[in-house]
Length: 208
Image 1: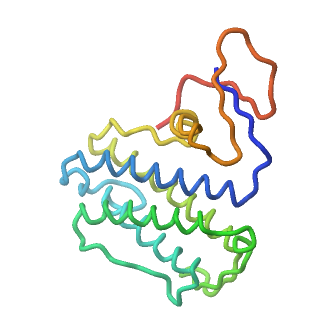
Image 2: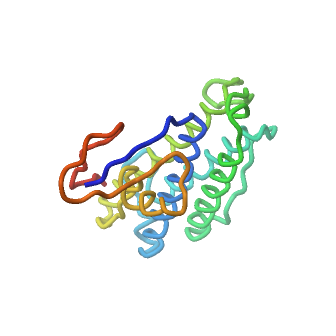
C-alpha cells in the first residue's frame, strides 16, 4: 500500500505540479493519437467542437492566447500551425512545454500580480496571474476529456490513462528518488503502518 506524506504546500508549488502534470498528460494523449489514422481524428462527431482535430486546435489556440496574456503581450501570442494534423499535435506538446516552463519560472510574488487582458465574452479584465493559470489547466483537462469521448464515438477505445492520481502514483511517485519538492512517497509492505498525515486508501481503478 502507498502512503504519502506531504509538507505544507504553497499555491505556487501546487500550480507548478499541475503544469508539469498537464505537460505529461498532453504528451501521453498526443502520442496515442499519433498512432491512429488521420481520417478518424478528422471525422466529425457531436461535441463542443466537431471532431478530435478541431478540439485539439481549440485547446491550442485558446491557451496560446492566455499564455500571451500571462506574459502581458498586447494581444496574446498565437503561432498558427500549418493546418495539418501532425502540426497541431506537435504544436500542442510544444505549447504545453512552454506553459510548464513559464509556470516553473514564476515566484510567489509574480503569481499574485494582476494581468490585464481582453476576453471575448466579457471585455477587458484584470485578474491575478494564478487565476488565469488555474483556468488554463482546467480548460486543458476539460477538453482532453472530450477528446477521449469523441474517440469512443469514432471507434478509438484504447485511450491511455491520464488521470491526475494515476500520474501521482505511477509517474511522479517513481520519480521521487530524483527529488520532487515537498513530497516523500514510500511503499510499505507487510503490517499496516500507523496512519500519517494526508494518507489515503488506494483504489484499484481509475477512470478514463
